[in-house]
View 1 (cartoon, rainbow, N blue to C red):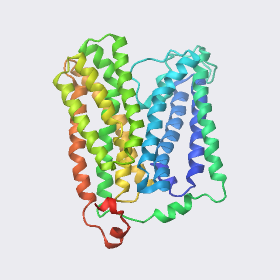
View 2: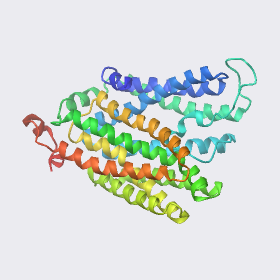
View 3: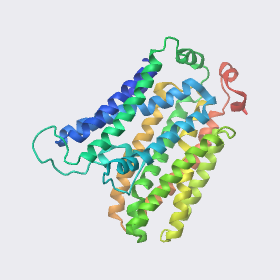
Length: 378
């Protein structure tokens, strides 16, 4: 929320660079925290800086390419998925850390998932961790982020950046008749989409072992299949976005999610169905988020505040739905609550998108109609 306001008033490259420096600092500090309070404070700063980067990256793509930036938006979110999938694995291979193989999600960049130490050996606030491999795993990721921030500061220092010119030409270019209603519906759309995505990715390992009876090694492989298919199809979406409209990609993704969730619920005890449907579900979820941002930009220009609004919806879904479902699954262990949630979310998003499309295509004001691209009007 704060990032959305700041991006409308501060140079975007500078703000992105500063946020990434704060993110790197958080990664450097986390292994040295020896008290819960200090770890909570450090993680809060880390989460805030990542939130600014998450919002700002989407805004920056829209400012640079506008409604023509669907492939670039897909590439941005592909890099996110690839990093979330590879970073823990590369850290484990390079430094020998014992990160858990199961339950990898897009939030695997969250360092708390790797920090499993129960209590510090001393009462000191800061101390070098006993496992130096853990320290180097955090430090290597932090150094990578720090290097990227240097490039962003370099763009900020350029005297004749084209960012302001691009922003001036797009700002106020068009506004849908029901702009705020569209943003609210997109908030709900991303709330349930991201919530279902993280819920399935977080609990598929536990579900496979307790409900289906898989071995832990198989369940870990199932989790890798989900996120591997997710990352691979985000990469393919870069190519598909060059000739498919964002709305078409959302419809195809919704159909794939509906079909895979339906079969998961119908054959919840079948390992074969679980393997096939999990891969299809991961592939179907891949392009929805970046396509949703590119789609809304075709009909109404997004500012930093607008982008922050639906990113908050995604973040709330990421936080709330897995927590609630975890509690419900604990109370009803014999029911596949996780699968019911994913199916319900798939139905909700499939029904909600036509409503958003109808609102977006209602007659616009005359000046907005002139600014709207021909492809969007069609």
